[in-house]
Image (cartoon, one colour):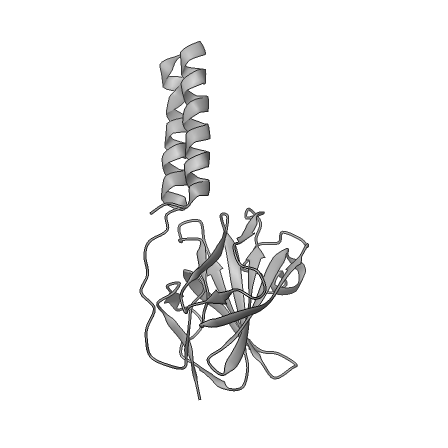
Length: 201
């Protein structure tokens, strides 16, 4: 399965390559064809099966856990960095109702930097359900400058359900309350919709 955005990009590149090859030389279209194939691969959207175990939160993104840090409000921040080779479709960590969706413009620092959590452009969602609430943010990076969110306040989501994507390199942060016990460590790679990040105590 491929996100529709990838199909549009690929079609545009193929069309541009064919025109350039027609009016110049055929080999001039080759780079466009390579980029089109990259877009189709980059915007892949594989099916995922979320765990059915009650009281768990799954990863909202594919990538590497690069930060686990206590916050001043008693919650724990976990950051997942996505490189250009990761699937960039984001998913809901828990089942419930979307309580809020807030977009904040900002900078485009390298997403792996600590300051990116505060200073970068981001879209923050809060999901209430399963006896808790969980906040997570889609954060733009140096190259990723387009955040897509398909959900709005009031929508219901299942654990592991698609909620949007971030184009190219990016980051997703989660804020776990004290009722959660983390199940991963910094340096681990996680899979959106399947890897368990935390369990309710």
